[in-house]
Image 1: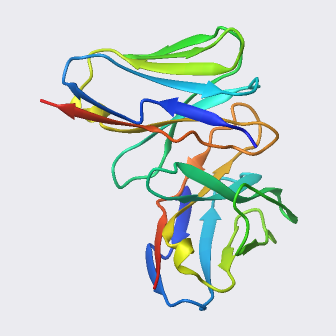
Image 2: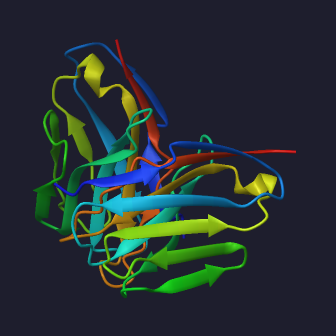
Length: 113
Length: 109
């Protein structure tokens, strides 16, 4: 199993550009989520999904869109990048049942200039 | 939203010393998870606590869930350089796993 994979690993965008961060898991997990991590802020939940076709907002959803058309994939779209979106983005997945252990991907480091 | 504070924010210890990080919530938690993140890495699941007063051990790590389920702690006995990283507590109410601010541990030889 590859686990949770994320692409790209690094990305530099200009303000106003759009892009999609890819996340895929091969563990047949129902639950998937996106976090951003900023220095001193811990990890903050952006969006999550409890299954294909179902998504919901987390703590900091503004400026991001998600969709879940398959169990395996959960892409995160930045509609119009802003410098405030410079961060490290982590995707995670879990079975959704106890003990809800989250498996994290390696992260994408995004810089918006 | 869920308010979870972790203290201390940073901790430097000499190798062999003990280390404790505390997680405090303003509301009662149904459960809480702990994660470790090595520098430059991603969070890795350590454990989940569910029951009031629960204590779980993993080798040198001891995890506790308070009787009122509003606080939790992670204690490391005789730290080693491999313990370096940031430790996060993470409550998991209603499908939204939220993380505390974390405690960054540095271990010096």
